[in-house]
Image 1 (cartoon, helix red, strand yellow):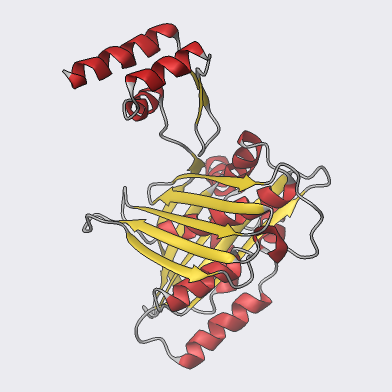
Image 2: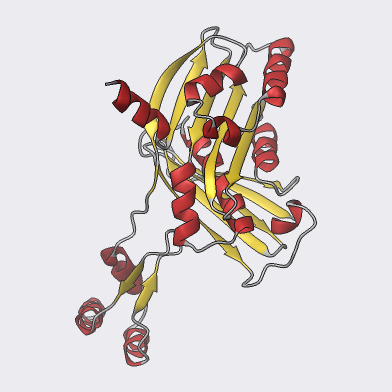
Length: 298
């Protein structure tokens, strides 16, 4: 039993807790394997992998405060060589994301030069809303962490503290990744918020703590100077719901001639931008799509 517990503690997961005084809600995430898979699937360099890993950790933390199939996405767009960093997560633990970047990324003087000047767009897809709830803020440091904190303060007006970390090995592979998010609830005093800020400032890098085998529960105990109760403990994975059928449905938005042109020119490879999985259309697939389009036209 102890071995199973230890194995679960070491897997990617997110825990959500609330302080016993009811004044703060907190979450911690370990996203090491999730980040590795994203970096491997998209064949990212260390800069793009670092930024995407932070975004995946951040969106996992934000999603932990949602319900079930509710979803949140964060998209960083800038004028730097890493033009877009996108990550999304469902509260149930499904996470995916991608990066759009120049084919050759020049040497940069600081992390902020990666994404550059731009915007962060946050979209929430909630049960009680027919349309996504959206917020847009200017990027502050283009380092993911500061930008998420700024969004929470400006758009949602929630005093928050967040720390995200990615640790790389000597081979430029992600060895650990994770983060912590603390949000003040109504009734939290300035003094209590300052205590949280001080604790987060003094918290060692999350990657180092994870590398030392420190559990998420113990990391939260270091990050939060108050007693708390863990209310949710869920595994997370890099997971995409793409499928051949979904791609075929998208192709039905095209015309018959466009589908024929794709077939004749050998454009039969479809690639999911979220997970880089490839799908190959066979001749029978093209004929099926064309037949469906003709039937709809009649």
